[in-house]
Image (cartoon, rainbow, N blue to C red; front, side, top):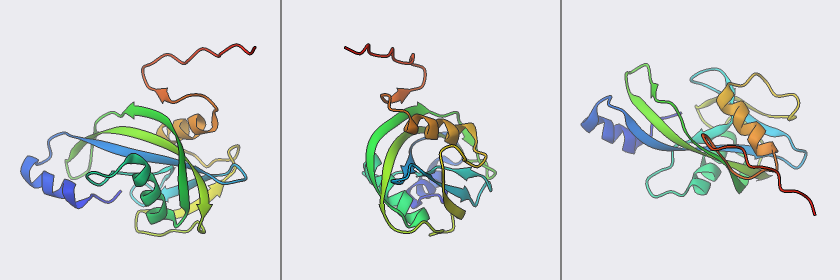
Length: 165
């Protein structure tokens, strides 16, 4: 993920100290139920699409912007899938960040999936039962987006099913 200018500006003042940031992930589904994934340029691995909101930008706006910037696919956010504070990370340059990730399930409404910026090596649609190898981060988000349940919050018990009737 490219570092936004506002974070580069903050880093001039705080150096590599831990920076708490919002993050937005988008699990994009098409009408056939396929999942849109990108193979990241920084890690080489497949993942869901995501990024950091610009100051004042709403999470749904971030999802729409990031998906289009990275894949040229137009989406409509449908619901919040999960909210999770991630573990702190240290980047090769020494910068430390911790993200509060908000994952949204989005429906594709236009565009043709293609690499649309320098953050992805490949993009593609995958059947939910034939996903490429994904890290737990991405796999959890895809699984939760495919469930019909309520928003999932890490650390909270899974909700009990509501009896029919």
